[in-house]
Image (cartoon, rainbow, N blue to C red; front, side, top):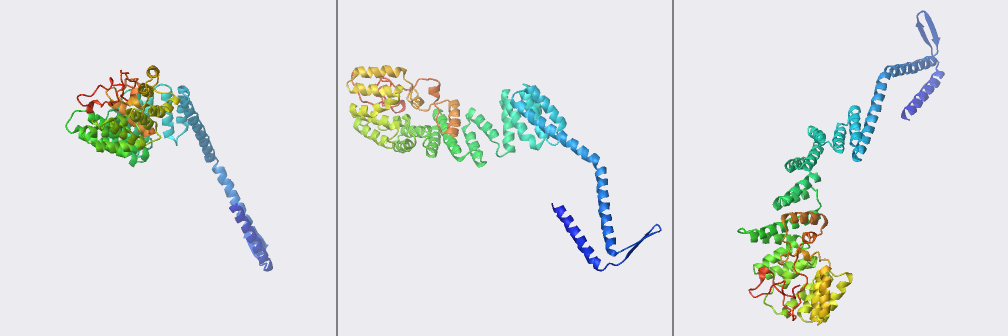
Amino acid sequence: MIRGILILVALAAVVAAAFVLAGEPGRASVEWLGWRIDMTAAAAALAILIGAFLAVGLWRVALWIVETPRRQAAARAEARRRRGLEALGRGFLAAAAGDGSEARRLAQQAGELVEDAPALVRILAAQAAEAAGDPAAAQAAYAAMLGFPEMRLAGHRGLMQAAAAAGDHEAALRHAKAAYGLARTSRWAWRALLENRLEGGDWAAALELVQGGLDRKIVSPISAERARAALLAASAASLEAAVQPGGRAQALEYAGQAARLDPAFSPGPVIAARLYAADGRPGRASALIEQAWKARPHPALYLIWRDLGPRETPKARAERLGQLAALNAGARESRLVEAEQALLLRDASKARAVAEPLTEAGPDARLCGLMARIAFADGQTDEARAWMARGLSAPQDPDWTDIDPRGQAFAYAPTDWARLVSTYAETGELIHPRLERRERVMSELPALPAAYEPVAPLPDSLQAPDASDPEDDWAHA
């Protein structure tokens, strides 16, 4: 477009000059090889311009003829490149479809045709070898990538996955560390390192990784906060179970940090409150339980709260239970606590009015046990035994299964804690390993006595010498 405008402007200038010269014709003579040509100045100027245009045209034609071989070579190279890129695309599709032999054929074809995309060719070769079931060839292809800076990260990832598939966890960890050092935003390398720390129960190293992931913006702040709370609780649980000097004090510090960081993560407040209660500091335990109950009620919190006053009267205990239920009045756990409060006050009618609506959605074994105690307290022995029979086949309350037969909540193995940390960090939900394994939990169904005794037993760690066995006391919640 611009070139055409320039030509028109030049022609207009020529025409204008011709008209100017026409008013002053002048003379021009040319002698060449014995010939003489006389003409006006305007005619000479036009002849020169026409000659210049012809010379330029001839020069362009000559250049076009001279450059024909180069243009043909460039066209062949472009066609070759297009065929190579097409082979790459089809090769990746074949590898994704699991057609290893076709993917390898196309990878070889692409390697012969494409010269400006060696990284893509090497990645296709590695994926084709994986699709063809040739781990040695895949490993060799990934290892070759380590020699090129732009391919090094992909090479480490492929080698890590190959090592993990072969069961060589040390090599997989080595490649994950190398990749994590190369790229600040490499989430897969960070994830592999974190899973390794969790599997080994190295909670301190996992905490460092979570902080590093937050600094590098690999994980969101909310996921990092949940992960930190869960890891601190896991650290507290491991120290609480270990018999070593200063272990309980350190466990209390970790559990307290977890409870303050995320009160909705029940294990942290439960462990902290349990340790505070065992140390004779019920006030600190009460404050933690209240905060956690507002965020997410859990039966383990109720059990610790219930037993904070081991020498109090049933009326005083019922009053404290009412205070706990009022902190989160709409929650199911709070309704169950209200029913327990009514039983302590020997008000079976109120207990039934509170608990019976909960059975409409299908009662679990724990609710069946509560309804059995309510019916017995109301003098309905046959109804109580019917609820007992129903409870034998009812599903378990998932949160209740976090409590083992001794009354200890969240007494998990390191592998369970590893899964709990990972799941809670990602989803904000608790898992229930004892429910998954169908393990025994603290008794949900009462053993009906000859007479109702509204006595709530203490957990083993807080029982007085004359306390009754929780599993033998029918009023145990």
